[in-house]
Amino acid sequence: MLAMSMFSWWYEKGWATVLNSFKKRTSHILAYFSVVTLLRTLFSPWRRIISFPGQSIQAHFYAAIDNLISRTIGFVVRLLVLIAALTTFILVSLLSFIELVAWPFLPPAFIVFLVIGVVKI
Image 1 (cartoon, one colour):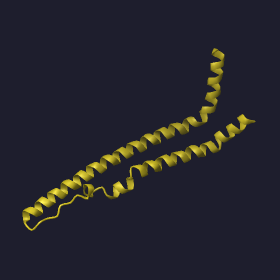
Image 2 (image 1 turned 90 degrees about the horizontal axis):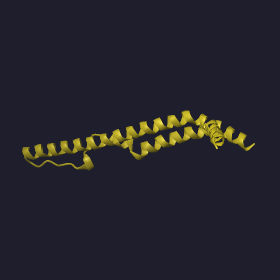
Image 3 (image 1 turned 45 degrees about the horizontal axis):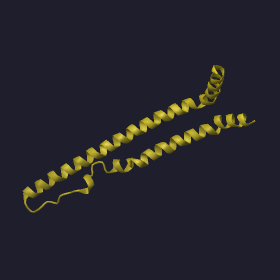
Image 4 (image 1 turned 30 degrees about the vertical axis):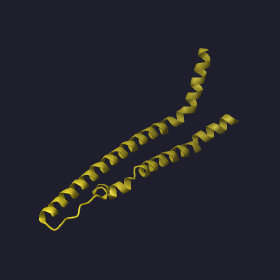
């Protein structure tokens, strides 16, 4: 009776549990890396470091160069974090897909390996 209830859970509610855990993992990755915020602020200056121009044309030029460098650094850092988020997302998705494919074969595999282990003794 216990084995039947385990199998019925495994092949009914277990599927929902695995899919729900996949959704939780992917949403956690998006929140952990702050993907929405990174995309929204992709071209913002790095740590909001900006230079204000002075009175001369030379001061305007230096401020523009400083701001361009700050935005470039911000873009590169945010892009690298987005690439790390994408890599993590792909890796977790791949592992979750493998888990989903292997899920129905785990209980029979347990029984098969148990029988093989008993026979070899």
